[in-house]
Amino acid sequence: MRRIAITGHRELAANVEQAVEQGIRARLATFGRSLVGLSCLADGADTIFAKLVVDAGARLEVVVPAIRYREGLPESHHATYDELLRRAALVHRLPHVESTPDSHLEAGRHMVQRCDEIIAVWDGRPARGPGGTADVVSLAQRRGRPVTVIWPEGAQR
Image (tube, rainbow, N blue to C red; front, side, top):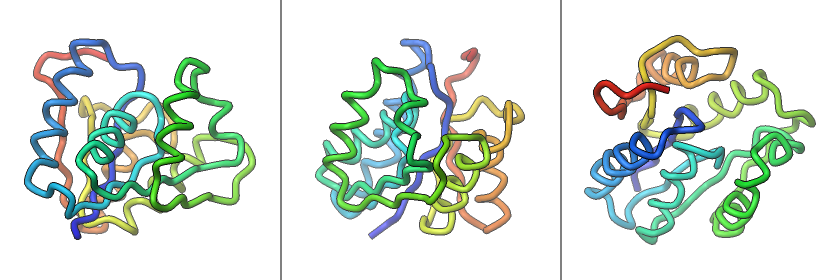
């Protein structure tokens, strides 16, 4: 079983979201059900990936960075988050109370340690704070994990 983790931007424009979904779908297509997908289920890239993993009949593992993580997500995303969390085969709950950049960085570290490769929905720019996509990509590269970057040419955040 191939273990693939996701890291990526949130609040994607509709056209970017569509292109990202196509890119992730293409990357996952070769694995079918022989896949374990790791995600924190944030809105944006994490959720697109998690839905595709579940729809393929593959195993979804969720990393929850903090007890209050859900509260930090947009309220409009709560139902999707709850549904995907229910469908997860395994949930890794980190011991942090508050959802902070440091807890997000630890969640990224947790996923990198448990995966064979990372898909990064990333515009190639530096992280806006600790625990951002660029930090997780850097962690993965330092650990020798292959990173597949998906970002539509010319797209803006």
